[in-house]
Length: 169
Image (cartoon, rainbow, N blue to C red; front, side):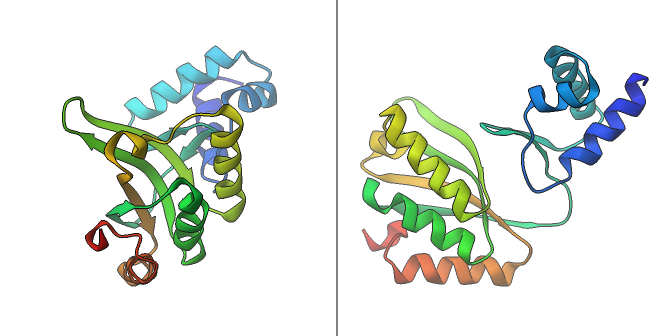
């Protein structure tokens, strides 16, 4: 199979809602992981909106709405906060903080389901790492994506009801 055809098939594979690792894609096409990484770079250069997450690549195309929520909560509330967002139909694209000295730190999450939330929380626990929010007294931001402004309004209302929005602090 030539590179152009492989890249088109990769793009089709990534349009699924579940991220796919470069290793899995490489195995499927019987090529090296490095070939796939190069294919992804070429697709990005051709304006494909491919997001790299901790679980793999995903194509982020389509007309979706985004909103940034400033939130504040304890570590014990991470799962509930993220589940609140995904249960209402949102996708947590990233988490970021604005540190007074070091500036912005951002990490791609792409959390779309309760399973993703559970995996993320378990990873934080098992790796014994501190979430970014620890650097800013629990305050942090999430870029949340949804299919409509109405869904984003519902998410905001639910986060507000649970006092996760920073304006309550």
